[in-house]
Image (cartoon, rainbow, N blue to C red):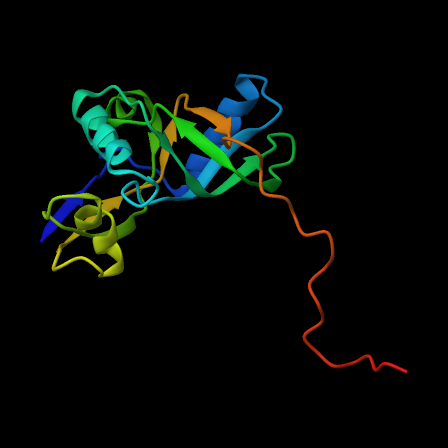
Amino acid sequence: MSNLFFTASDGVSPAELKKRFLDKCREEKLPYCIVVKTMDNPALSFLHQDDFSEMIASLASGAATGDRLPLLAYRVYPSDGREELVRGSRLIGLNVRTLRNLAGAGNDAAVFTFLQNQAQGFAGTALAAFGSAQGGLPASVVAPSLLFEEVEVRGARGEPRRLPLLPAPSLTATETRQ
């Protein structure tokens, strides 16, 4: 069992952190900034063992070569604070070294729990989160909200998934055919 607790001695409330975020966005004269509310599990976001091994090596060396996929990201407009969901974004170069340039940290805490397996191969590491690998050690990371000075955000690779052309069918039987 492994636990990592990341805390800040000068953490601020979530409301104060959001205020700092919007102030930084206005200071840079940006039309919008990005808030990431939920990140992916890096072990599960890779299709091949080589990609996963490269990500681990890049974290160890401090030079990230892989991308991270936010699961929930929002475009926030500093003029009025409104949020708009962003689809298909990638964070580039997010690694341990980026923690050196934090503009702020919250006094809140979020827990990310996963199974880390020591078995060889991709299934031993990534698929352990689904319980399909033999055994696995539970691990948790507890961290506050973080405000980074700068993180590169790019669109998704390849063609974006298209939205449906037709609305979803009604779940109630209110209309009858004649």
